[in-house]
Image: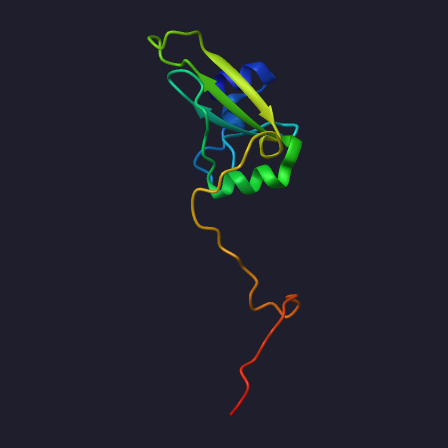
Length: 122
């Protein structure tokens, strides 16, 4: 998949491959600084994909420079020809559905804007 994408981009696949690198949040980073997350499927395009926390954070940070690549019909017996669908800024173009917990950080911050009510002493 990365070799196909690299060929389309006219770049060296070995230099683009970011898989296995911690917290990159994408499978490929091209020389122009665009991030590509590849979701590969043997059959037809699924109705949804899941992003890891690192992928979500990178997509949110990069906006239009983050491209979701959905590959479909990669198995020979899938009943269709292979297709790549590239979606730039997928967080803006697709519906988001939280599927797990979200951690809220900064509760101890001195500049936290909040109403504080303390129990009266008796």
